[in-house]
Each structure stands twice: as structure tokens, then as C-alpha cells.
Amino acid sequence: MPNRPKIAIIGLGRWGKKLLAEFSKQTEVVAVCHQGSAETSTWLAINYPQLPILPLPDILKQRAIIAMVIATPPSTHHQIAVQALKNDKDVWVEKPVGVSVKETIELAELANRDQKIMFTGYTYLYHPAWKEIKRLLIKHHEKPVWIDYSWHKWGSFDTPIEDNLLCHDLALTQDLFQVPLENNRLIAQVGISTNDITITSLQHKGKIIGSSYINRLSVDKSKEVTIKCTGDLIFIWKN
Image 1 (cartoon, rainbow, N blue to C red):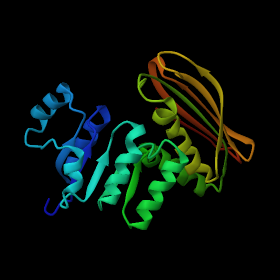
Image 2 (tube, rainbow, N blue to C red):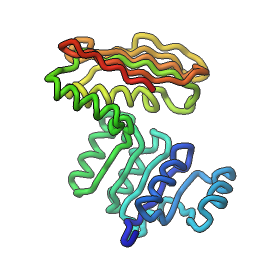
Image 3 (spheres, helix red, strand yellow):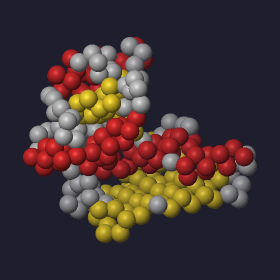
């Protein structure tokens, strides 16, 4: 494919490796940056032997690189994205784009000011099942009144559950209801990390419109979303 945009991938953990494979189909990945683990370097040498591993400052300086894909831990998203935007790069940032409202607003304002693209990878928002639910809501003139999430999985203990998992439920709820949300943690159980089993109420102006149950200590893997509507419609999206 001629004239493919040149990009760089920052962060090559489990998800970063998947992004590298996908972006290689649509763009020209000309550099990667990672923390330097021997395992990742070996994986790159086997699967992408011609791909340069460069430090972040060198990637930022290359004018030919027009965009950066950021797949580092959430606590680093803001600082790397700021550098990318200030160096005239579009950015694709893994969720969440920032770990606070302040960080997120700052990045949005910076991208708008410099007319750069900033996209956050909330993959469930683009799932065919989610698109179909929203289409049927419009078709049947229904509105959602309640949403419930149940998520069982194992792992991701090195990232706060809010940044790694709960943010997906918040993004879906925001997209469906199109209202500002307030959230209240009802239950938090310590497991391997600080919070590994949680129940969170999802609220708008003090009214509860849903709940999110997450258990990342489960040997079973499943995710279920239930949406109740103003009429008789109930949507159940499993796995």
C-alpha cells in the first residue's frame, strides 16, 4: 500500500504487541519504544527483525513520524501524549487517556489548540454488538433506563482496577446515556492488589442508573452487559 502514514508504537506489553500487529496492516510502523525487557527485545528480533528500537526523545524528533500509538501504563499516558502533541504528532492513546479529569481536559485542549488528532482506544464502543444495540434503540424509539455490568477475569493486577477495567464500563454508560456520571464505590475487596473485587453504582444527578461488578480474581472469564429500556426491550450482551 503506497504512501502509508509513518507511525511509532510506544509500549510493547501484551496489548502493545497486538497494536503493533494491527497498525502494521494499515500504516508503516517505523520505530518502537519499550522499557527494554530482554523478553520483549527477543520477541521483536523474531517477529519484527527490521524494526528499530528507539528512545522516546529520538522518536519525538523525527518529523517523518506523524503519529504515535501510546500503549504504556495509564499513569504515563498523559506525559507521553503531551510530548507527542507538542512535537506535532497525532496520538492514539490506550484507555484511559488520563488518570484524572484535569489530565484528560488538558490533553483535549492541547489537541484542539494545535488541531491534532487524539483518539482513545475504548474498543467496546466500536464492537458490532454495541453498534447494533444503539441501532435497535433508535429503531424502536426506546431509551435506556438501567445498565448493569458483570465482569469476571483473572489478572491485570499491576494497574488500578479503575484505570484498567472500570473505565470501559464508564465509557459505555456515558456513550449510551449521554449524561454526566457520578460513581460511588459500594464494595471493594482486597485480593492480590488493593481492589480486585468491586461493585460500583453509576449515577446521574443522584439517581442510580446502573451498576458495575468486577471480579479480577476469577478463574472463569466472562463479561455480560444488561440494558433495560423504557418499554419492554431488554438487551443482554454476553462475552
